Amino acid sequence: MFRFFNRVRTIVSSELNSMLNKAEDPGKMLDQYLLDMEKDISEVEAAVAKQIANEKMLKKQADEAAELVSKREEQAMRALESGDEDLARRVLEDKNKHVGQRDALQESHAESARLSEELKDKLREMKDEYRDMNMKKDSLKARSESAKARAKVNESLSSIGNSGARGGFNRMEEKVMRQEAEADAKGELRSANKSLDDELAALDKSSGVDDELAALKAKLNSNK
Image 1 (cartoon, helix red, strand yellow):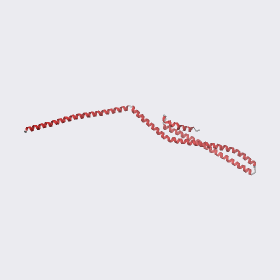
Image 2 (cartoon, rainbow, N blue to C red):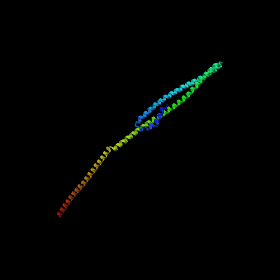
Image 3 (cartoon, one colour):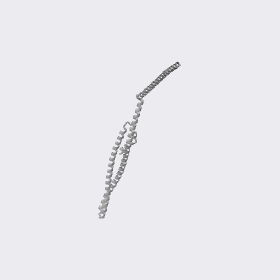
Image 4 (cartoon, rainbow, N blue to C red):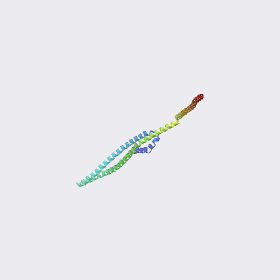
């Protein structure tokens, strides 16, 4: 009778915990499991409704049988009061027949009421399980998406490290470094050449001053 309830237990205890390791999409599978549970709960609700209706019917029949027993006892009393003992005897015989029916119906109703409570407890338990799973669903979906994202990032990083892109990037970096080194070397060479030109210019300037000084000395000597 509780095939559906046992299936709920199986989902909660095992399938949800191992779902992320399976090939199925966890989000879709979670939605499907909840749909299955909704269907099971609907079936149980229908079964509980039928059981409660049966319990009420047995209750009504048991009450009617009890009322008839009481009625026959009152009728037997009135027959005795009127002096008709034979009628009273026949009424009591009929009452005794209905006593057996009353007792049987009351016993059936008690068993039916017990079963109704058991089914209602199971239904409440299933609904509690459903609510717990429904609240857990969004969390599991988020965890699944996070796991997919991490796997994608790690896959991309791995492919970058193992692909030609990394090697090409390194080559370009080395080329830039060589270009920078060449530019620095040319700058140093230019600086060296410039320093040499400056020294020569200074030499030329110094020679001009010496010549002018010599001319002044010669002029001074000629005036003496």
